[in-house]
Image 1 (spheres, rainbow, N blue to C red):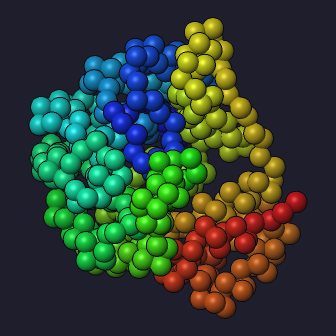
Image 2: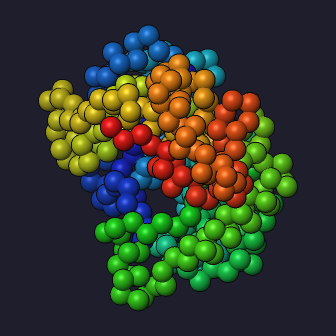
Length: 375
């Protein structure tokens, strides 16, 4: 299975915590859309013998594009690539873009999955994060979207300064009340050079409390699993049949093509990323040039990446796969390095797979880094 990710680098306003590539100016939107279509055409040879099973519009804020513009991009994919009969086509959307009329129109398009950036149902949280929508819009868009879409995911953020555990539980319960089959949830992270980092440094906003974020992670896990969700990846919970095919492909090391400025691609052996500048991207594509930086992964790089992604999922890390793909030396190294974490009840072995315990899940990325092999 392979997928295509299309990055839409536009937002109405900058969220205080965000360090993704985007612009709040839409002046170059038409040029950018044409460039995206041209890049799809230029890179079709990379997927010549591949069936595309997922198409994901991410950003930025893809819902800033009109339905016609989204359809134009979808048509461009079908024109240059072989697409499966029933692809998963996801649109990331913000609540303020999802009016009743817009939702109905989207439901009649090829888009069959919405990923809605709710983040919180509380006004104070939304203002702290500088989100473009308000709490009422968050609720009304879900009320309407669930009438017209079966496959909906919503995003929530925990560990927000000033947001109590009681408030976090209320956020989870509100999300569950809409009956959506998938929830993605992330700890608020203070990224360098963001407005949030500046506000914390100046004392305008309290710093993130890691201990409280840890507590809220386990509250989320317990509540969603009790409600029939499967915690299939560190930040993702889905009911049976509703795991994100796009994201699951990333974690399982499948190939994907990243289209647009700053978009990343992976073919199993190499990782590439497009230039992180809208004007440079547009100008290069106009000259039929691809400004892509390529990194060829060593065997050790590939092993480390498998450890990082595998431990985040319910599928874990297969000792058999490690031995077959990387050799007995890597398998023996993994067994030796994991022993201390098994003794601490942070990892366990089940059916030939190394997996993270409930106790170890919040520490997953740190544990993975300790299992990395250094050349």
